[in-house]
Length: 433
Ligand code: DLL
Image (cartoon, rainbow, N blue to C red; front, top):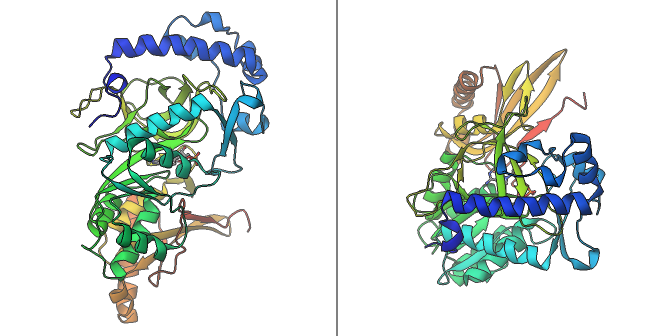
């Protein structure tokens, strides 16, 4: 099923005409109403009247997280405060949170685009939907909640915390759809397994987002919870969840709400715009946001765009799963390391659980990486000799993937802190040493 057939299956020419009108309007509003954009555009020598085509987008200056921080709290708002009806913040994935505001119309659009990705993920008015995202300043809880209600699902606003209660609710209420971070889904799956619930839950759909996760993790969550897991992406700076999401039929890229967001991929080094299909940093310009429009926002997220219509009937471009950011990259002894690479490697090793922590330390002048890995109960009860052999095997595997020698420390099941929100996979001791 497609939630908004008219917009989700537009032809590219129709879409581009709509985008251009909306872009001109957004650029004028930014220039006239938010001094930051007026200054930045003056500096770049571009005026709203210079935007004649979508390609003219490239004349506009980029916006970065620091611009949001330096205009904290309300400097980028383009409406009077009395029109702002809601505020949220980013989770500070990469530092201090940033504030975003919504008008009533922004909330309406947000609800609609969430309803789109929720429908694409398989949820209908027949579903019972449990939301295990935080309901506070984070956009995940309320965003998904509004969308679920719009679709007509029976919503359980469980929020985060209390894993035991989540499982009880799932059993007692017959939950069929679960929305949370993939790492929390995995935690719920492990707990459910431990309590002998495998095969006893009624779950059908898992809507997971807000952090990177791998295909192996998808397989593991699906097996343990018995549901169809889809990925969805968003960021508070542009709206929250709802920017894009996979369809449950094909799960081949996340369908982007391109009628509300103009997307580009740039080379993060040269800042040149790249062609479709090339991997680079996702840059988003909002097309309909009233309270806090953003021009060419550098998301820091690495992905690729695919403009080909999907077999599900949606024509809007898709973005590939985001597995890394321009800034979660660790550099250890000159080697670039992405936590997701470690995760993929660990998931290929049978005895390990996908719960891990990367500890980066400094020894003399050299940086080192220690990987703490949880192992299964059975292995942990084995002899020391066996444990050492497994450590060596994991270290060899990681070395071959990362091109870096690493120390591996096996830890008991359930010793690495579980996160109810986004998992923190890195402890960087270098700053402290
Ligand atoms: O995480 C919004 C959200 C809530 C999305 C619920 C999906 C579901 P922020 O806290 O502002 O907003 O964090 C945004 O999280 O720039 C990405 O780096 C990362 N991120 C979000 N979704 C995904 C995903 C919400 N599906 C930042 N895959 C983004 C990988 C993701 N990374």
